[in-house]
Length: 388
Image (cartoon, rainbow, N blue to C red; front, side, top):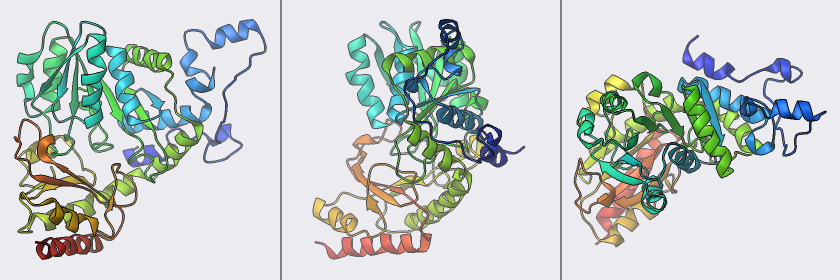
């Protein structure tokens, strides 16, 4: 069956729930056993496959994990409370004192903060590398390099990484490849390109309605699953049953939402590219993007998140343009049904593109009519011109 069909039916077991299409929300902490022997068996080698304690998962979360593993193309999935929890649990599970981490310089901001503020205290060294390094990353790999972390596209400036080339170099040295695949959900199959662990901020497209915090860790290897699952358990990370139920609900419509939002986002990006006020649009599906060929090679589509760069300007002018947006609300998350905007500067532009200090506006295009969104942006440019 094709992916869209699998997404609809993965983790769905009406025969277990008296014919109900959706599993119930299991609100559980304590799980009782009829005997010491039964409790011992329940907590044996397959304890994470069983329902043993609420923190380790309920039938609701196991249905969700089964469905996400299907979507990502993996064998096992672990649900946690946020995308950042997925990142931190994975890195702490795979790294120890004295190890070396290669982290893309285009990573999500909190990932960088975790490396710089927490991993350093554990005696783990991080080296940031140019996201466009490709197979040349082999020159940065040391004997103690245990993890190579990729994020494609990059956060903010949307470089596409040559993940197959990076993975080949990492595997040749015995390192594990971890990917933040939130942007590529359903359109980049991580395990087909050499990724070992795929992470999702499921808060975003999987939940899809801006009403739950959730993260996932998907693997395609039993030993890696045991390692990362143990780290999740030791840190006490867990996802609430209400949240995983909302994630499972959102997952059923994620394909159609992604297609609609990608198409709308591309229309908005093309319009922005034609505007004289805009210096550059960072969207990998645009032919003008320097990594467009890589995107075409490795992705089957995309999502609705991209950025555009403006020339230097007074703060008052930028605020006049953005504060007056009606449909693009100011907010840091993305992946929901509503459009969002975030303003930063290209201090976050990574090594591949350099830094000029110019303002950057990151847009998430929601499910509104794209013509209305374009009109909202056009009115913003009008305010920009009117403000001295």
